[in-house]
Length: 91
Image (cartoon, rainbow, N blue to C red; front, top):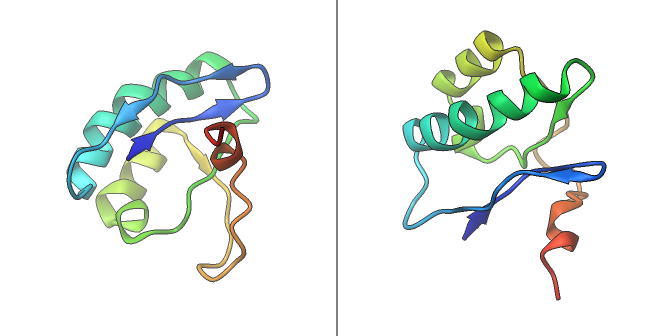
């Protein structure tokens, strides 16, 4: 499995994920290492979108979003999957 982020005309590095992704690993290796600098570089108006899995909604993750100023897209847990990154990686 890989993690990646996109914004109009730019993308993050792909981060390989081995095994089960846990909240501390997600926080340290993805949010703080990749998303926070990406967010700071592009400034306000960036909205972070994830798929509402348990790792993305853990308390330590919400704290990092608040500390780093990462704005999340709010959507229901049962919404249709409209994540554009899945189409970027498909051959």
